[in-house]
Amino acid sequence: MRTQVVIIGGGPSGLLLGQLLHGIGVDAIVLERKTRDYVLSRIRAGVLERGTVGLLEQAGVDARLKAQGMPHDGTLIASDMGSFRVDFTEHTGTTVMVYGQTEVTRDLYDAREACGAQTIFDVANVTIEGADTDTPAVHFEVDGKPHTIACDYIAGCDGFHGVSRKSIPEEKRREFEKVYPFGWLGVLSETPPVDDELIYANSERGFALCSMRNANLSRYYVQCSMADNVDNWSDQDFWTELKRRLPQDVSAKLVTGPTIEKSIAPLRSFVTEPMRWGQLFLCGDAAHIVPPTGAKGLNTAASDVHYLFEGFKSWYGSQDSAGLDTYSQRALARVWKAERFSWWFSSLMHRFPDQSDFDLRMQQSELEFLRTNDAAQKAFAENYVGLPY
Ligand code: RFL
Ligand code: PHB
Image 1 (spheres, rainbow, N blue to C red):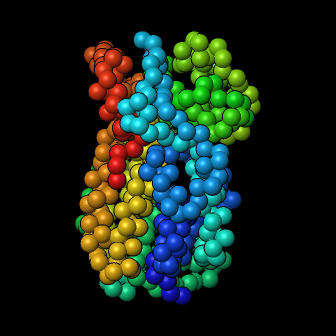
Image 2: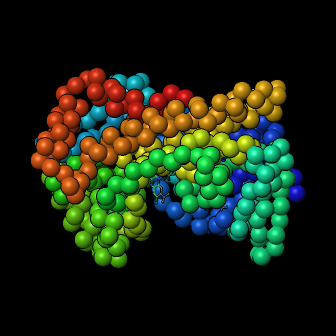
Image 3: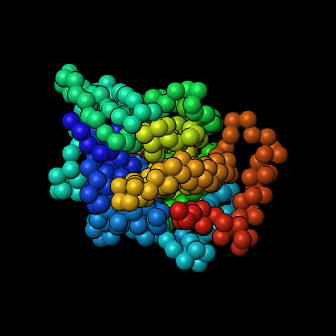
C-alpha cells in the first residue's frame, strides 16, 4: 500500500487532520488501534474554543455542532469566599462552544465514511520505519496479518500512550512533566445541568466542576486521590460529595439521578520537544498533556492540527516547506501558553496535600484579585476562549 500521509491514531486530532487533508485532495490513511465504537464510548472534553470550531467548519463537519452546540459567554468561579462570573463576550467579543468530544469524533467519523476516506481499525503492533529518511513506512497487523504502508509523511496522532513519540530516539527529544497529587472523578448523568454555565469550585474539601453536554446530560467532577478506586464511589457518595463542594444555592438546585459513566482521570502536565523528527510529526496528546482545568487538551490538539495542515497545504500545493519546517516551533509556542494557563488554573482551584496556610492565602488572594480586577478577568477570558493561532 502507498499513501501520502499515514495518520496513526483515529482520535479527534487524527480525524480532523484527515478531513482537512481530504479537502485539499491529499490522500491519508488513518490507523486506529481500537474499534470505532470503543473510540466513541470515551467521555472526554466538552468545551471547544472558537479556533477549534473554525477548524471543524473548515473541515465541513460543523452542521450538528452548529445545531446542537451550546455557546457559552461566561463561566462561574466559586470558592469559600463567594462566587463571581467571568464574562467572555465582554472581555474578548467571543464565546466558547459546549459540545462533547464524543460528538466531534462521531461527526468526523461520519464525514470520513461519507467521503470514502480509508480508516483501518483494530490495528496492532504499529511500528514506524525510516522516519528520518525520504522513504518512511508504517508497519502494522490486522487479525495477525502483517501490512505495510509506504508514505511521504507520518502524523503521530496516537495520544499519550501511542507509539509515535516513543519512535523518536530518546537522545533526539526532551520531555517536561509535572504529575499532580490528585485526580478527577467524573460522572455523566441524564439530568438537567445545575446551571446554564460551567461552575469551577475551589472548596475546603477540594475542587469540583459542573459541566454539561446538553439540556438533559450533565457532566460533573470532583477532585479525588489517585489512590482512590471508582468502585468505592456509589452514585449517592458522589452526589453528596459534589454538593458539599458547591455553593449552597447551587447544591440546593442540583438535580441528581443515576450516573451513566463514572471514571477517574489523572492530572498531568507534559510536553515533548521537538514535535517533529524527520518525516514524523507529533500532534495532540502524543506530544503534550494538560490537566483538564480550563479545557485545553482537545483545543491544543486542534491548534497543532491547524499548524500541521497549513504546512501540508503549502508543501503539496506549492512545494513550499516553510510551514512544515517551522511546525514544531509554532505549535510549541502555543502549546506552552496552554500549559501555563492549565497549570495556573489547576494550581488556583485545587487543594494540594502539602498546602501550607501561606499557600492557601495565596490562592485566596489570587481569587480575590481575579474577582475584582478587570485586567485579570480579561487575561482569564482570553486564555479560556483560546489564544489566537
Ligand atoms: P486521543 O484522543 O488520545 O486519540 C488517540 C487515538 O490514537 C489511538 N492509538 C493508536 N492507534 C494506532 N496505533 C497505536 N499504537 C495507537 N495508540 C493509540 C487511540 O486508541 C486513540 O483513538 O488523542 P488526540 O486525538 O490527540 O486528542 C486529544 C484529546 O483526546 C485530549 O486532549 C482530551 O480528551 C484530554 N482530556 C480532556 N480534555 C479537555 O479539554 N477536557 C476534559 O474534560 C478532558 N477529559 C481527557 C479527559 C483525556 C483523558 N485521557 C487521555 C485519559 C479525560 C481522559 C480520561
Ligand atoms: C467537561 O465538560 O468535561 C469539562 C469542561 C471544562 C473543563 C474540563 C472538562 O475544564
